[in-house]
Image (tube, rainbow, N blue to C red; front, side, top):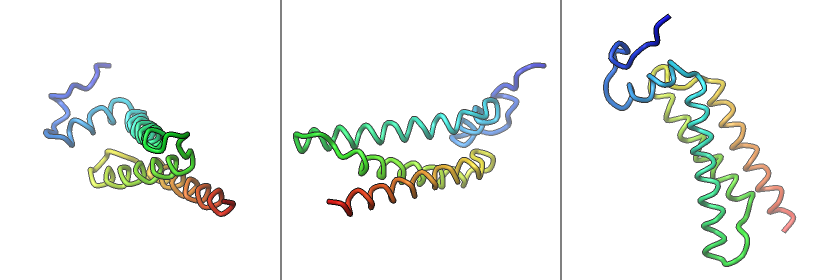
Length: 109
């Protein structure tokens, strides 16, 4: 069986560049979302520690990264065939859990 090439995929533009790897490798979009989550989490965590001069807040960075990744996954649903509903549901679940963790830890302070 031959691999599907980009020329035979029959889509152009940015949507084609994202849907082609997602069609060939089903784990592409979850890995991309995990990379976005990790970069956002580390950026906000180390940004807080650089600005304040002390350790960054883990739970607020986790919440920001969760909500940012959920927004990106919701925007990815606009492109047909790019992301599945279970992946969006997992991203939304992570954002809800991160918000609850943030609220619980801040209520103790």
